[in-house]
Length: 94
Image (cartoon, rainbow, N blue to C red; front, side, top):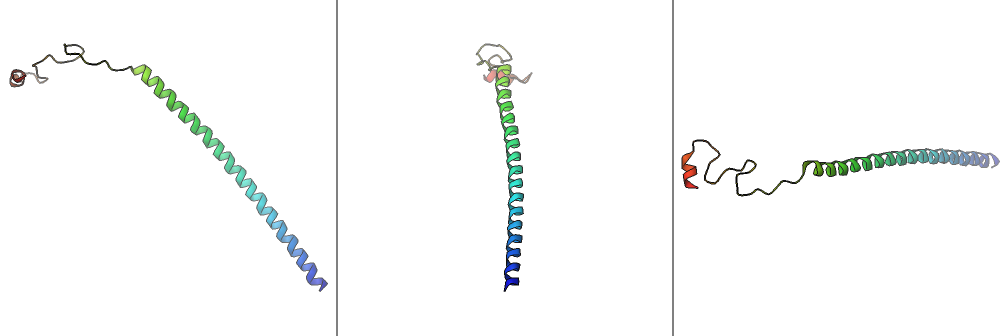
């Protein structure tokens, strides 16, 4: 009976040690995952900040297009003329 009790105690201690090792491994993995999430989060925040700055700079650099006027400014064709040279029927129809 004493032998059985001693084997049971040893088995119990062995199982506790295995669970402790498993628990420590899981903590290490959780720490690694947390570090990866933190790194990815920082990278994503930097990416978003660059996208926002890029859009802001782009909108200021490009400007806003002017509304076209009816007169012949900045590439507007005069009334009654076709963009194809020599197309007299199109210019006569307008």
